[in-house]
Length: 261
Image 1 (cartoon, rainbow, N blue to C red):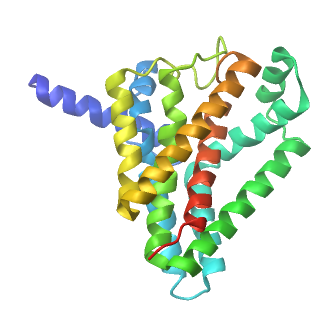
Image 2 (cartoon, rainbow, N blue to C red; image 1 turned 135 degrees about the horizontal axis):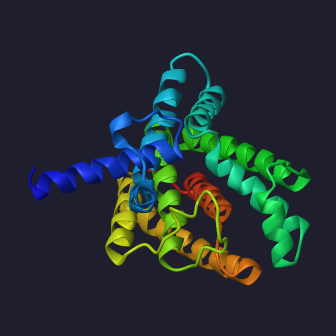
Image 3 (tube, helix red, strand yellow; image 1 turned 90 degrees about the horizontal axis):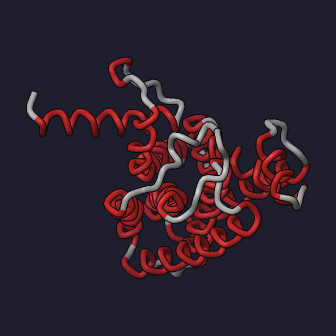
């Protein structure tokens, strides 16, 4: 087997590893597992977002043939939750519980590690899901189904790019954890790949919207990063989930406020 074929096979293995880790989609047995696969798979995180967003968009499009936009959008959101196992929503709830329920770093990490959900986390999930639903319905009614479906894909991809970019600049703060194999430093080449994949779907909407979205995500990334460093000294896997959820909401907020023509 030539070196080119070996590299292509390895890249396919890393992509399939990302698919298996970040979604509930079963992957073939030949993919196997090694901790370094997860680190290499991190650069495909935004591409998994494209897939998740596309599934949500297809379900929404199909549902629009029979039901009003409010029902169709909700079914699309439900499809993405089933596909990912609410992986990132869980991170949002854990972070809000921990940051809202403790001040000392040790207590924050302890609460974040607890699998039980508290009042803060439950409220955060309800608000986040309601916001997504209403913002996407607003986009559907104001800009039409084409913009809605493109925004779904762009939101999932760009938010994952923002979240995984922390691997290039911040430190993972746990000695062990389920995100430990992923949380190695992202190389400049890997970061460039992440940014390119995450930004591409935004251009499907318009150049102006893409530039505004990137600016908004960079501002959010900066503020969140400072908060994570101040409270924890770095990030955890739950922090990445929280970042993805807030980034996705940022895209939808901007899309709902945008004047589409």
